[in-house]
Length: 298
Image (cartoon, rainbow, N blue to C red; front, side):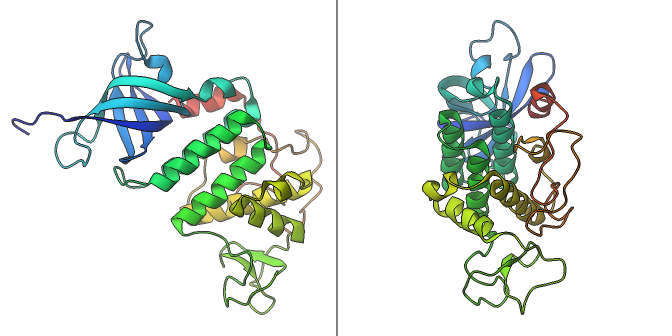
């Protein structure tokens, strides 16, 4: 547009993803506090002489100055990064820790999928994403619990929270044993559709604890219950997203060694009905952190 001058503005953001552009530039996908998700070009950050290239890596919390129209009314859809200050670069703490790195990758990918419209403010999702990355870095809770808590609360913000204390179909209150992803959560015997899973009661209790933030209950659960919970959460999320998350199958959830015989469904969760898991069990990935790093920085 003739006569258009880009506006400078500041915001803090979480770096969700980076992509190569040309020989020395990158496109940075950001989840900002006040302007929602947006993409910006960081010029020259792949050069060894770049002043802020190391600060624009996935999972970092940064304060930055951007050039462009915050509302996207005029000019290019890509903003330009002119200044960056690191607030907390969580990615550096995850590089040598496969479980935390893959969990952070799943969090970042989920945050991007939950914000399909650019420049639409989502303060609660920003705070949730930042809190999840901080919790991963502190290591006070199991990595899988932090990830599943993030996914459940993210679905709550999107309006997809699974029904846990009442039937998802008729609303009858109570602790129902059957769980149906297409129906929206726990279902009573009268509403139970064919193929519904029958998770252990402790699994439903864990999902409720993660949603409400009752970490005392969540930390006391057994490994098998956590795996079953992860399978249901992954299935519920990907059903509503209508697409699979590439990073979820790579998350290390403490399953059996690669090549170990499959012992079948756990708690009645049918194979193939939980977003790439079998009965809540997720097979350990066959790729290393380097492979996932290429996904995050392609």
